[in-house]
Image 1 (cartoon, helix red, strand yellow):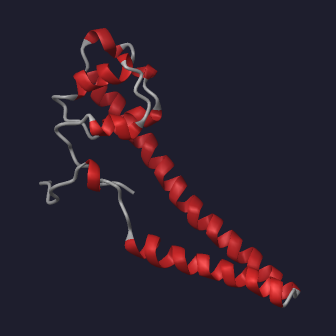
Image 2 (tube, one colour; image 1 turned 90 degrees about the vertical axis):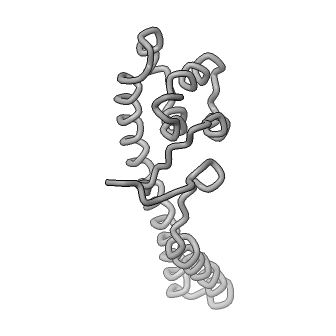
Image 3 (cartoon, one colour; image 1 turned 120 degrees about the vertical axis):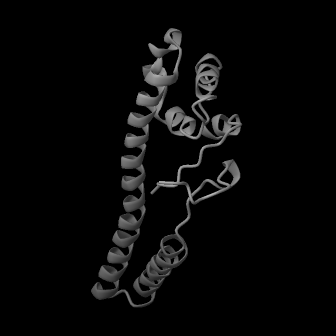
Length: 147
């Protein structure tokens, strides 16, 4: 399938889903604030239960995102192990297991041509900050199937 997206880079690669981040999140936060306000002003069992449910909804909201990102990162790590076995020179293929999950997730944006040199640099310089790794990428390959 041809790539219909253009221009993804370090500055704009973070994914924001407007209904999730800008509508559902603020509504849940406002609901929690109102729930605590009701507990303070009313102090009824009903207001306490509403506040607890509001907290539970925020927890669900946050963990829904974290669980999805965790599953995505597992798939990225598998994909990167396969790419690295194909693309890395023999002398560093046996070091694939030395990459941390965050290093692999950051390296996924590197093109096949620049992955070997960048992977070597990440290991040799012990680069652990994913933003620093992403900033080293010259030929950014967009990931348009992200959660």
